[in-house]
Image 1: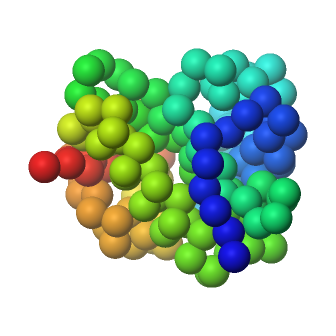
Image 2: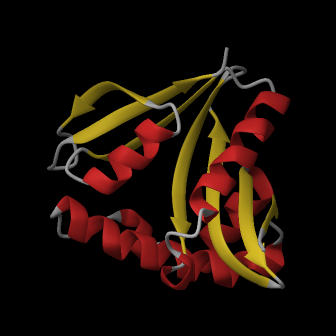
Amino acid sequence: MFSVRKATLEDTDSILQITKQAFLKYIEMAKIPDTAALHETREQVEYDIQHKMVYVAYIDDEVVGSVRAERINDEVAYLSRFGVSDSYQNLGIGKSIMGVFDKEMRRHGIKRVVLHTASKAFPLMRFYYGRGFYVHSTTHCKGYIRALLCKDYD
């Protein structure tokens, strides 16, 4: 059984590893050469843990998934760096992380969550659609079609 909690600095190395795994898959799905997430440093993850809303899923004492969000304004947050460890895929961990994430966003007064993902990353698009996100717009600013997805909390 797994649980979800707010991340601590002790989770830094696990979050960094999960992020790299997830984004290696992301660039493969999106058919793009690279992404900034693959070059993230330990210090950047520590900064996010201290200044953003970062949550981890864990089994026993092992971190198996994570997600980050940054408040853009009083009512909007930007979701980033979502991933689940390769060894724990397809067990409902991602859905559980997003369920806790949704509750936390509501608790913080967030009315809308936004994120970018590659429109060609069909498994991710399906996952986010299944969690209530919709496509707001697309852009080609990073050299590939990125969808801006939104989720509104009524």
